[in-house]
Image (tube, rainbow, N blue to C red; front, side):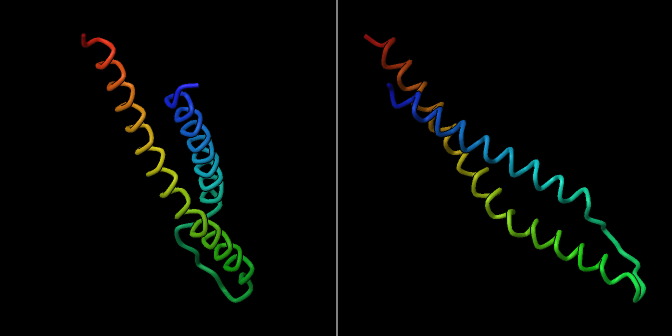
Length: 91
């Protein structure tokens, strides 16, 4: 197995995890309100919003890191592919 195929598999797994996290974050933010007008009887809604915000803040660093790693990895894969292609065509 060439290193390029191994890198593609690793990239595919990391990108799949990233997509799952992005879908999860978007489902969380669908339930998040930008602005709440609450009276004292609606404190449970405020707690729900705080929980949603806490979950979103918890997964945001993972989304950023996985996005950066996925981007760098695809650039490395493209570089290796180009290098192999150029080295095979030169005499």
